[in-house]
Length: 386
Image 1: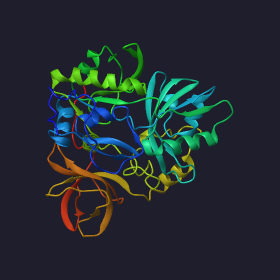
Image 2: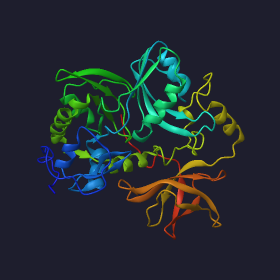
Image 3: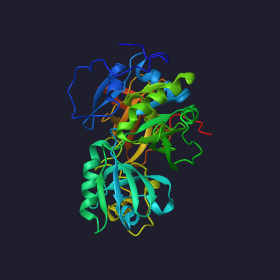
């Protein structure tokens, strides 16, 4: 496999797909990843890059924290809600209050089960206009989110699955502004604001956002326009020693920031209350799916809460590892865990019993070995985004 250096990362399509089970879908950048020798894996039914040769997750993680990296996240879902009253309908479905922002802004929100308050999915909603909201759910949950919306949509509201109409490329890191500016795309955007721009005569949505905690953007081009945009970004990164990055580095980066991953830290059994995601709930709204169940749970205060765990001994915590208190009693479970490339220590997000406090010393059962850890409030790494 070729070394992924600034001089060689602009590889042309070709190469061989690593031998592994074949998911049903690939991104429009699949040939680019294959040409670079990426290690590929199934993400929600999509074959996506985990890491590239020449240093893998550690090198890619460091590039984003110190310089710049780009991620193909085209597997993420896309859906359009359109028609008179579209914004009000979306606001009646999801947790966050769309009326706290105005076009052209985007917002993090959650789709909850109406009966239990469990999280069907977390997603980004682009408030385009009163009659149009663009949604970006997680890949595996897109169809279910759309199904639930279509079942509740009033006459005149249309929800269409646009999963393979658009690609998404994330540009993240301290030098992300310079890279995006080099393509002539707008960067003078407030956080979670977006602009519809033109690049090579084609439309690209530019959102000031990202899942790494660093400065950055998420670019949404048309599906067929993505390869040329990716190549241009790769070229623009060369002066900054930037790298294409796989979803392995995306996971370590988001874990260092304490950002939740649906299926691990949010799920049908882990509610926004438990995940400390109440900041993304419009409690004062008249209604949204799951409001009554979440209010009842919130009032009862009988649920576990998400904390960070910083390993003080050798060991890498993983999801489902038991967490024990000072007396050896099980007090919780890890939901996400990894080795932090920035700290060179094991870190985790975990659901812990009430009564646990910041600074408490606990142990994590990692394959039968007790690894000492300290309870902390994420983020684990402080990032300068000024």
